[in-house]
Length: 176
Image 1 (tube, one colour):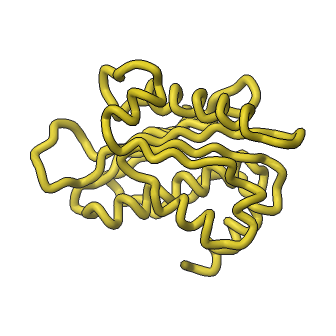
Image 2 (cartoon, one colour):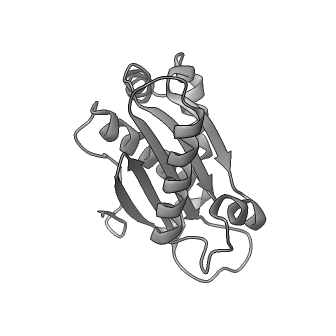
């Protein structure tokens, strides 16, 4: 783990927000990085890996029309926030994080390699759309999505002003 990433996660753990993180398709490295740095129990309340379609359906309460979309990320973040409010044992800010992504795969898949990330705090949902180059490969894409997750949580915790990613010229990150 790079020193700057480790330090960033440490600063996240020093801040008050408690997090429930739900992800589908990518973002598992973000969870590992959060746990790898001491203090994760101050930050994470729960993580939900919705890899199977029925798992995502159970989280959302209904099958999504399209699993990888801004609407699904937003719904995941809202559900995660609800879980955080149920699980938190103390006062303080809560975050519900929802990430859904389609990465490079060994089967034919329609659509671009992309990620949608949403974070709910109190009554507001913030989001990101990341389009990725397929030539990156699955491992690089997983790394990029996980860096987006950590960066966005850092922004919400107030330890960073913006999300910083090393994007290629044909890749984009949009905030919504």
